[in-house]
Image 1 (cartoon, rainbow, N blue to C red):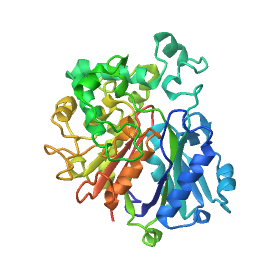
Image 2: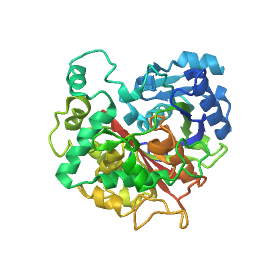
Image 3: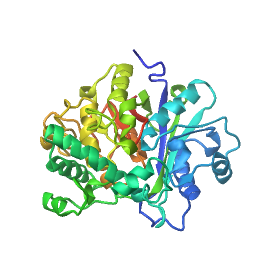
Length: 405
């Protein structure tokens, strides 16, 4: 089953602001940062902002869950004359790669010519993603979560991680290896928030926030904005850089895992998983590829155990074998060979949400584009295919395969 829109669109422009430690972007605004990212993406693509005629959002057009994107405001801010496509996916960070599929849908329907997908995030002291459930108004789900001390996403993911440890013998050493392996990729990245080398002793000394998750198992809390521009292949060939071809894109999920984030009611084996298996099977079927064909994997890493579970769901290793796969060094990037280690696939060569910045998945798309362009800072040699995953937090989740032109 080949995806009907396979290789018909491409990402042609990427742009980003600086990344700020949470709260340090003030007095900038969401629109200010979003506008800067869009203009930089236009410059990267070699087009005018007046050429943009579409928006493909995710997270229900939520700007970091704390604000909402308004197409009219962005048009006014940037002087866009008209828009013929504006749509959004549901879900949180799980919709990030899927928004490129949404852009593709608008382009293939000839509703638009150049589509922006973006995320801007600004966390002020009174608005933090890390305690979002604890500060939420009571409802049937929150009335279960709050008395149980499950006040933020990390607390919920800790329960899934502990279940995986119980079922498969997964160890905290594997979580630490994920953090250290991806930290090793940020020393040469000017925008990265965490660049200092990380030792096992330093990881082990990190405070336990939600057993078994230490502070360093949690993603960063950052401010900033990232935008990418998608267009059709015929237009992409006239843009400034080699296009990153959209080879496949899948968005969705399985009902049993949909109970995970707030209900805690799904059965095994779904409980001890990332919830990506259904979507992973779809994207491999669409593309005719498998995990072994990927040259680099940009895995959504809001919490380190979710990387391990996604590696299993996407088939980089078998279910329950993530611990040994990670500890064998197979997610590491080898700067000397510009490739993987021990037959593995480099994961999050940009440092990811854990170490570079957390802009709800958009930095992963940028890294995927740069890898297949051949312009990444930590370039994987001859990278042809890059997998980008989004989520999991709640359903739906999504994944994207970018191909070198």
